[in-house]
Image (cartoon, rainbow, N blue to C red; front, top):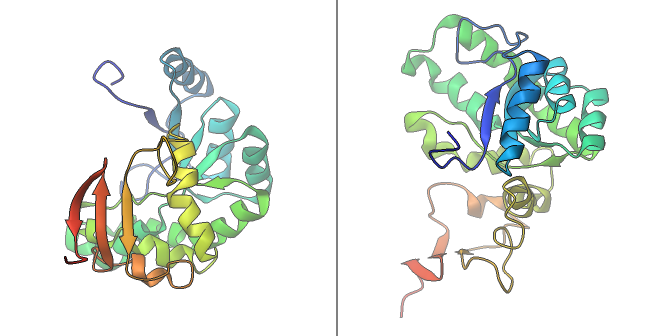
Length: 234
């Protein structure tokens, strides 16, 4: 994958939710295999992210050099503190479980998977509280499937039940830049950064709803210094 241009490597450190044949608590790799994956990524000056749900699987991954945990719903306070000590990130994907709970059956999701979704969905908001308390840096992602991509901005709304508007925005900007090793390039409007700018019709620090939907509140979109959408008029 690195030879073909991948910026980072993702591995499966635990079982999944949408997949019916792997229990959430199962392991994807041995600890030795995780270490080798991390070493190979490091040899190409990049890092490893790990799909992981349970506290045990998260701890194994971070202990063996994984830099960022994807999902992470079933973490506990001890493991969250361990993550913070190691400087590991977490990228929750809470909107995914809401989408699968509401629309999963329409996508042909089997009953066993629907039951697993209920488990991680319930734990999702509580995991945010645990990560925040432990001081783990929280990135932003979705993991949505197919037509449910239209719901990705709802992640702002869900996180805002636990985190402040400012904290949620930081997840998607400055912390996301750290996760991607793009500090100084992404996540801030400053000299030397990429000229990627969103002009919003509203103040998201007061009301995150202006970041929801499919861009209805985006008055201007600039990508790389080029205006791609201008709703400001003449």
